[in-house]
Picture 1 (cartoon, rainbow, N blue to C red):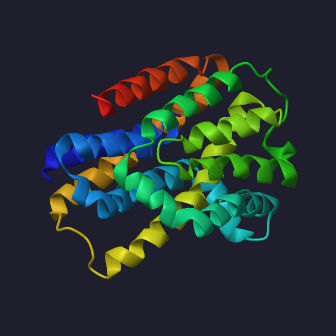
Picture 2 (spheres, helix red, strand yellow; picture 1 turned 180 degrees about the vertical axis):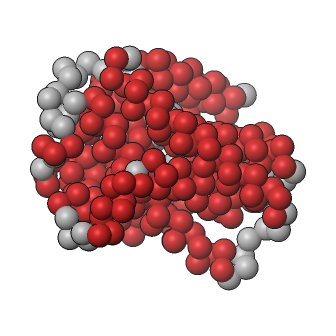
Length: 256
């Protein structure tokens, strides 16, 4: 993998992790385009570290507050909201890893993501702010996050949908959605690192690794800021149409 390929994949990861069109699905397509399927695990780990850096920078005030008061209400909400994804990962990880490798279902998953996004746009804007989120709200939204164990189901899209169903304000829905992704991404990186530490990974140059990670961090930060501002006044249907078109193209190509 050369530095240009690494840069492009970093852009893809950074943007699609938080724009609700599925980062995993797009990375699969990006790796396939460049012929980098064998670099999957290690590359995904570094790219997710990049988006984690973006979240840490964006939410630095909340993270510092949580470190000072680890038993705060927001910490409890994040723990509760992460439980469904942990359960799904422990029970079905091997099955979904196999699906991710083959990519046979990603066309359908893009279509499903589009349906959820279109549905979310029909929900009347709620009034709940961050301070109004209940424990049940957090668990409910986390249950939608668990659906993103499917490769091309958007994690940010699902959690935003779950938050809107629970009558959260659109801006608060996006804000909590991305905050909830911090423990999910941390868990995914830690889980993947066990294979990285055993040396069961392809050789990738240090330059390419750094370029991919930094690009992911930079464009991930831009995507977080963009989506929180965008969702306040704009429709999610544009993303639904995009993933529908992409899903149909993939299904057609898979059957050619």
